[in-house]
Amino acid sequence: MPEQLIQIEPQGQVLLLRLNRPQALNALTSDLLGQLRAALEAAAADEQVRAVLITGAGRAFSAGQDLADPLVAPDGSPKDIGLMLEHHYIPLALRLRSMPVPVVAAVNGVAAGAGANLALGCDLVLAAEGASFIQAFGKIGLVPDCGGTWLLPRLVGRAKALELALLGDKLKAVDAERLGLISRVVPDAELLDAAMAVAHKLAGLPTRALVETRRALDEALKLDFDAALQREAALQRQLGFAHDYQEGVAAFMDKRAPRFKDR
Ligand code: T3D
Image 1 (cartoon, rainbow, N blue to C red):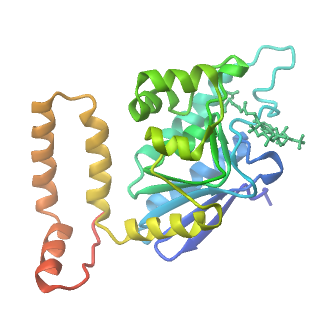
Image 2 (spheres, helix red, strand yellow; image 1 turned 120 degrees about the vertical axis):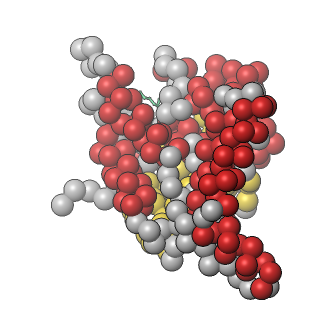
């Protein structure tokens, strides 16, 4: 029986995924990354799942790549750590970014290196007051990965992105919120309940429209204003023909709760 490195806990329409190597601050091994991707694949294929919530077991969210993993740990022989990215981090980051349901991160403690960028790649990021974020790559002679080079300047602008990435200092959750790096900070004891409430709220909203909104925002960064307006019109046309628009408007008119089902 393989070790359960991701705890999978269905809670109604929300699937809670807990990184589960607390003794190593949930450092990311190839096995853990494989299990996380498999859990996300299963969630993507399961029509009952309408939101995913990712958190860490123990006192950390994740300390990033497991630096003791024989696949990457320097031992005198050359290590192609690009393979680790190609086999694990790139597929994971792409899977996360293209999930057919919203994904929430509940950052319960330190999130370092790829652990930080795993969290920042989620759609909404809640953090406990005691949590922190570290772009730990530079200190070990690497560049930000798991999407960090793309995410950081878009989230906080070039100047702050460079400061975070070059200095690699610990950023407290409250400062991460102030910079716009994350969505919200909550008291430590309230993190999981608050994140679960957000995930349940997302699960009750029209999933397809939420996912198209994520895609449209990401794509708009590459478009000029005219092209973004055209993209909005094309998306609105598609969504206007879909069930959830009919249902959302009907529910509003009838003064009742909507029952969305599109994915
Ligand atoms: O290499 C590639 O594949 C390329 C991909 C790279 C992606 C990356 O993520 S690179 C960045 C890797 N992560 C780091 O460099 C962070 C290393 N960890 C730390 O700086 C600190 O541990 C923390 C700031 C995260 C937490 O500090 P603290 O003082 O709260 O805890 P600690 O005492 O340092 O760590 C507790 C234990 O976790 C300790 O083990 P022990 O002594 O109790 O047996 C420590 O060795 C272990 N641990 C922490 N981080 C890692 C780790 N073990 C393996 N890999 C880690 N990344």
